[in-house]
Image (tube, rainbow, N blue to C red; front, side):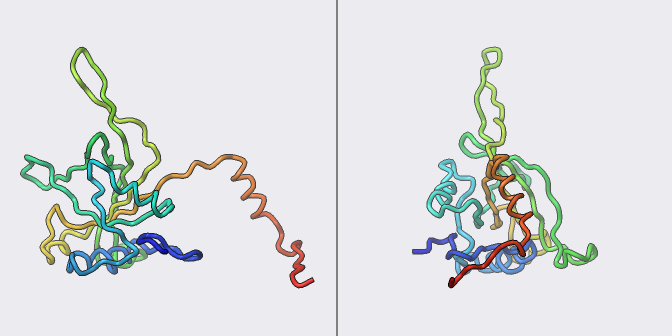
Length: 198
């Protein structure tokens, strides 16, 4: 059985940033209920229970794509997005524009990519009063893809519009394994003897 978000052996969902905007996010914004590609899961990435982690346990994948709705900060009059949930937070790192033609800096801007790191907030006592700090990044990284403002307005999207998030877990690589890969890459193919059928 192939679960949503998981692909048959030998296949991998690896769209370009432009494709994520034009072929997935734009159709979802135009038809939120009807457009449900199996390659992009739908999950609340700002849920206190952090159910998105269950998908990684279920599929065994180290990278998954999700549709999620952004949430406006409570008691805020502007368009600020709530990034905290439970005891965790997605901490913004950097962002840049996505163009319809990545090679042409003058081409139409169709979206934005923002990178976040996942951090767990830990409570500390400071002079008898409660305070909090953010722990070190535990390895989760999220790339958030949003529609450009003009495109979002065409379909009536506000700060609660759908976005696509690519969430991945950084893998710890030991020196020995990297050395082994380096040795494999340096093997001369002409030195390998093909003995099939003998």
